[in-house]
Structures are given as structure tokens and as C-alpha cells.
Length: 422
Image (cartoon, rainbow, N blue to C red; front, top):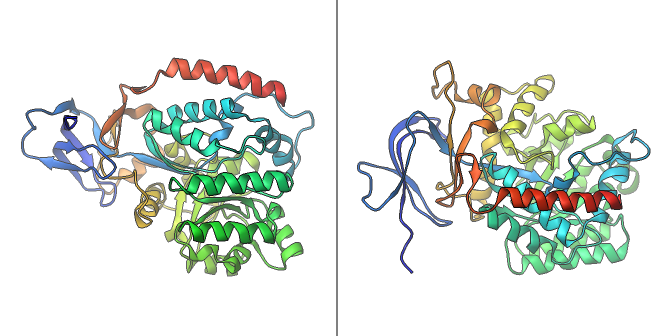
């Protein structure tokens, strides 16, 4: 089979995602998970070309913590009794929804979420999945759906004791079977629904498959209260005691309600922290403060959407009342997920993942002010073309590998089925 024709982005004004240096020229892009993007003096004679005159080119985006299974929740009927706190939000909405999912709904959710993310400039998703009554095969279903749209991924299944031992064991089996064939993480819900026995089993799986834990930590104060009452220590220290913070693949999502000892422990940890500002605001659980562990923080969307640029703006604005990050600090949080993936040798996030931005502001763009453009003005409407592993997966704001209208129509059918079960 002949090698695919190289792709060349001509007249590309490229913003380096790390140094923020800006250079204009012809950018040759090679395909594959280890592909590259490099400036060339001349356009290769057999190359497919995309003229980037008047546009910007930079690295594609990644979502550091998603809940793809929530894609069919948009506009769903509210619970009969409105929640009054975070635990009731989980009990009356999300734990009700995840138990109603079946294989068709999971696939429809993943396809819809993948299209949403791709059109937001995303080429890689780290996801945290739950479907207690349809655990078997769920991660492979999500993986295949994401790949059909052109996205790479790092998946896990949410282990929990909340639905009893049969559900817990089904999640353990799904995790073990998935990790035998693909890179992934060992998912846990949160300390307050995870027994010591389950935490031990999760850590055993993580060590067996040379991976990390992906868990919600101190998203609400109630998580800390439960941990102190039942385990005699705070959430971060419980996971540290289990060894989860020693694993460089571990992701601790949220980390809002921390004390100074936990901040110091995170500052010294190998684990990483994912912030989800839009979700935190939606659930009124507080604003995350990265003081003490700023160098380990990246951004997720928590199922609100597949749009890291929206998360970055929310992070910047919300956190002004917490650790008051500068635009540059928030930009680094937006990009740090690439650092996490590279440090752990996770494939699918090479430099040949790119976005072409149709962004023509009324003010100059420089290396010094690009982060301010990102947090104040850049949004998904500026995403014109997305290149994943050197292959165009979004062109002129439309997905190229799948039929968006067909995916949306099928998602609406599955959403109606889901809602009827709630």
C-alpha cells in the first residue's frame, strides 16, 4: 500500500505551543502517531496543500478530564425533587443517568462527544466513564467511536462501591480486560464511594498494568468530611497512603477543598491535578486554587462540553477570586495535558496534531500577548481545520471522516430513549 501523500500547510503563521514564538512559512506534516510537523523551504511536489494565508496555526488541544457518557444529558428533564447539595446532584441526576445507559446510548454519546470535541480543536480526550448496568465492553465502544471521528484517547471505567458488589466487580472486570489490550487508567469515583478493599484492588490493577489512578478528589467538602469520619485522614492523604500519588500517570480531578498539608503533598507528588472550572461553577462546589501545586495542573471539561478553550476562559475568570492566575499561567494549564501525555509515553499526541484558526483580531498578536488572546477572545468558532496524527479530521468547520447529521440524528433518538428511562 503506497504511503499517504504528505500534507503541507502553506503560508502558515505558526505559534509554537511551548515557546509562543511565531514563524511564517510552509509547514510539512507527516502522518502517524509518531508523525511530525516541520518547516520546509519548498512545498513537496506530491503534497496535499492547505493555504493558511491570513490564518494562524498551532498545536491541537486535549481534554484532561471528560465524562463522555453525559453527552445525551443536554436539555434532559430535571429531577422530580431539585437537588440541594452536591451529593443530591449525583444521586438525583448523574447516578440515575449512568445506571440507565446501555451499549447503544454509550456509542451515541461517544460519537456525539467526539464530534463536539473535534470541532473545538481537540485531538485527544482523557475520559472517565460510568455505566453500572452496561459495563462490559463499554470502554472499547467508546474507543472505537472516538477513533472513527479521528480522536485519540486515554480511557478508564469508574470503579465504585455505591451500586453494590456485583456492579463493582463488573467494573473491575471491564478495567482489567480493557487494560490488557489498550493504554488506559484505573478509574475510581471518589473517596466517599470507594472502600479500602476496592482502593487496594484498584492499586493492584494500576501496578499490574503500569498505569495510574483517575479519581475525583475533594470536589465537595462532603468528600473530605466522609474521609475524615471513615478513614481518619483527608482525601489527598488517603490516596497518598495507598500509593496513588507516587504513580506519574495518576490524575486527581478537582482538588477544591484542600488544606495546607494536602497542598504540600500534591506539590511533591508525581500525580497530576485536573481543574474543571465550568462544572465547579455549575455545581456550586467552589473554585479550585492551585497554590502549592501549580506546576502539576491541567484543564478538563468534566462532561460539560468538549471545548478546552471555554474551560480556559472559565478558569481564568473564576480563579481571579482564588489564586488569581495570569493569562500565561492559564495558558500553561491549557497546554500542560500535552506534558502529562509525553511524560508518560502515551501515544497519539505528537506534534502533527494541529489546528488552523480563522482568527483575525483588531489588535496585534505577539509571543507576549498570545495567552491574553486565548483567554479573552479565542473560542471554538475560530476553529477552521483540525489535523489529527497528520490527517485532516475537520475541514471548513465540518468533520471529514463521519456524517455529522447522521450522528446527531442517532444521538437524538438515543437521548429520547435515555430520558424515558429516567
